[in-house]
Length: 62
Figure (cartoon, rainbow, N blue to C red):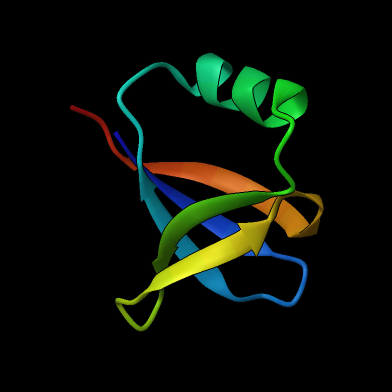
């Protein structure tokens, strides 16, 4: 599935995730890392600080 993540600064990021949305939330809550790698709205790789995530939505399900 393709996820859209909006940060607290209102930037949009995109991420391909191959499990359920619940698994993604569990991953965010239990990871030892502070950042996730995703695609920024300008189509470049970006690191997003997990604590800066405002919302997550599914924009395409496989």
